Image (cartoon, rainbow, N blue to C red; front, side):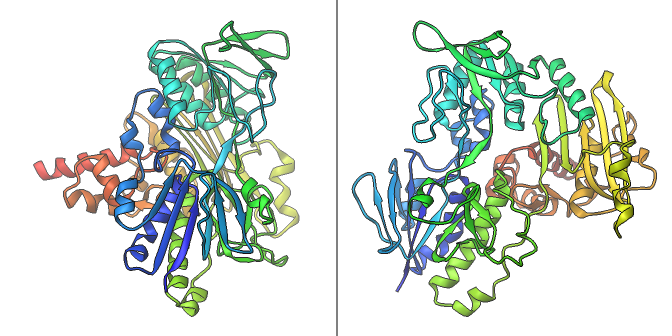
Length: 518
């Protein structure tokens, strides 16, 4: 007898889980129901801003096709909301009155945008209605609002100095809009970047045509006679006029449905290393709504609470692992399921700003400066090697690099305006490899006569960090007939996440065909 698996949510992570479970559905091992609030199937939310500025199409963002899933035997319900979960009877009450039952329930509800508490906005997550001219840039409707503003060359105000907000601002400015970024602190990305890198980044943004309003505290939204956005009000009494306000203030995991049925939550739905909800073996969670923190107090990995990463890559890896686990459970292979290695811990995230004319990469702890004696000497009282910091800046040309190392191994990095150096440092950081003794060798990678870095020659390097696809796999797909980024993405899944690897995929395609012509 097959098991009924119900997936609540139909975003990018749910799409990956469904795709991985399809063989079990087609073989009759699993009966699957997918419930999505939006009237369309899953699409890539990470690239909604690109859609808003006209650099991609809605079809290119699509990650699933509802008709194909139905033909494969999946029960797809779009435009329907789950009102309540009855864990005792293992059924759901939906907004259309139906009550589907489940043997295994998977929450893939993702995250909702944070609405700041400003006069004129309603921050209640249960009633997220925003006035005309204000968007959180989360769905296709938000992309349409941005597209209308950019196409008309209007004034766009971006509230928030995070990566998505900066990428939106840069793209909108390049496409003709007048853009102002408003953020707390002296420079954007204040939680991730150091002072020197932040200052160079802010100057580079200005050089790209983006106006910056730092150390600004927003207090309210002003509307015109028609009720639409007209200005963002600041606490010093000033106002920033605009036609569209883009809220980029972060996201918060959607846990209200899980809380309503009594599941333990913190920042997200608490799950163990097998993605099972605490004390509930029939319920799982993946993606932005899941917080991996097992109930074992002696677990070293869970000693420091860490909420959901907010990145699509870890969610996809969770979905792939969970699909294999659920398939074994549904097949009755309980021993094999229990013998599966637990989900590996995620490595520290690398923050990458993808924009034309401006590159930036940040990873690890970059708070210490070369002259910070307290931080540099902290390792001397323990068995750990001392921290060492190398720093180089060329503000006039928008270039900056910082490397924090212990025993030569990279623990933190900042690279602004140095694309080849950034690529090399990211590779070394992800591998836990040692830096060369002469750090200036890395800076020369972006010199006028520099050759491509050794990492870029490595065919086994990870090109797409979201999907974990290597250059070898991409080259194999190209050799098998893929001649465009879209074809490579369809074959390997590379480039279906944040899109920052598209240029490198394109370069591998061009390299292959140049060799073929030669």
